[in-house]
Image 1 (cartoon, helix red, strand yellow):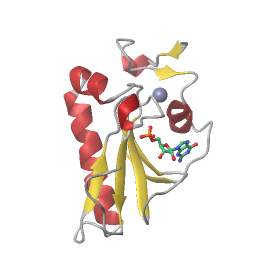
Image 2 (tube, rainbow, N blue to C red; image 1 turned 45 degrees about the vertical axis):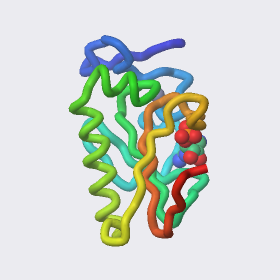
Image 3 (spheres, rainbow, N blue to C red; image 1 turned 60 degrees about the vertical axis):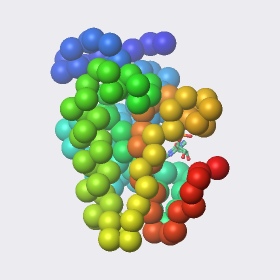
Length: 131
Ligand code: 5GP
Ligand code: ZN
């Protein structure tokens, strides 16, 4: 896997752009996405195949494959992802009604893109347990 580490990344661990990663390409602007919020270290954009009236993905701009790698490497950045998900929920006006935030992690959970992402889902009633 080819990694491109920026000067600010420090070049350690996974905090680099991975050349063949879909979400790293969205961060870089090489693949278009409907961006709804951005901070220096996080990005929120609409899912291309929405499963609810609001379906936004929130990611760290640096590449971490999954929740385990992000949580063990940079818990502050994980918190920034959660805060941005909550801010987008407010902006989308789904906070009052309730919303769901999901990190699919690993094959059994159905993770298909190996750049950690929080799914923010809302605007309809959610079922439990999930499928
Ligand atoms: P996962 O299955 O890994 O939990 O979630 C990956 C999500 O990325 C899916 O909900 C899928 O619809 C979304 N996705 C896949 N390709 C693209 C893309 O090119 N653009 C956007 N905006 N979302 C994508
Ligand atoms: Zn990536």
